[in-house]
Each structure stands twice: as structure tokens, then as C-alpha cells.
Length: 199
Image (tube, rainbow, N blue to C red; front, top):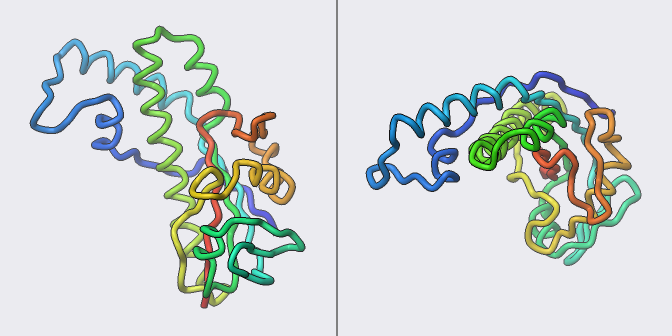
């Protein structure tokens, strides 16, 4: 069963956000003018964010040295196989902050777009972390008490093409996510991930 979650609560990591903008605590000074610009951009960004997600739980059928099999599908990745070894199930998860945020990025100045891009990156990461925690809380009801960290297409040797599998199994278009010809996600501030789980 695939679950759709709308209005996922999130809180960005402010230190990571400022780090993306090149600021280092104790080393970089932020002028009042720049602080004002950042605050104004964040306000616009926050208003454009529409945090949504999908997830589903699947029994793992087999893990070999190079493959993970579930739901009659085979994913070839040595790193993912190592990541799933010892676990009985996996969650597929997809989150996005929506197309409206991408549209905002296209409308603003280059300077503001840089600020908003950093905000969007941290926002979608925070949304993914929020849904990840909710999944772990729910897992207890299925006698799943152990979880490995999120493993996303494009990490290690897990190809971006695996996003097509997420589209097939989660029907990500229900929250507005599409897979491009090069297998990246649209809207740009979207994340897919595999979360191994076990008893």
C-alpha cells in the first residue's frame, strides 16, 4: 500500500543553509543589507514550498553481492546490496517541495535565485528527514525496529535510472514528480530514497 502525505512539517538546518551560501561561523561577516536580502528571499521561498511525499513498504525477496530483489524487481548495485544486507524490508520514499518553488526560481534575479536555491535544497532535505522519522515511527506497527539511513539514486553505484522504478511503484506524478530523459527529478527540489528496515 502506497501512502500519500501532504503538508509535511519541516525545519531547515540554518547552519547548513548559510554554509551553502558560503558563510562560515566566526569567519564571515554578514552585512545588514545581505541579511535583509536573505530574509526577504526566505519569506518568498517559504510561501512557495508545498511539502508532499509518498512512501511504500516492500518485503526484500533476496540480497546478493550485487543485487537487491523486491516486488519482482531487481536493482543492481553493490553498494545498495551492502546497505540492505541483514534487513527484511525496505521503504521506497519520494518527497518534493513542489513545482511552485521551481517557478519562483525562474522569476527572480540571479542573486535571489542563489539564496532560494540554498533554501530549497535545505527545505527538501528537511522534508525528507521529517518523513523518514514518521516512517520509522510507523515501522514499529509492522515489527520493524531497525532502520538504515536513506540511500538515494545517484549515490555510490546506484544509477539515476532507478528513479523510473520509483515512478512505477509509487506513482510519483500524484505529487507532481516526473523523471526526466536523463533520469533526474522534476521539480528539481525532490528526493527519492530507499530505507532498509528490519525486526
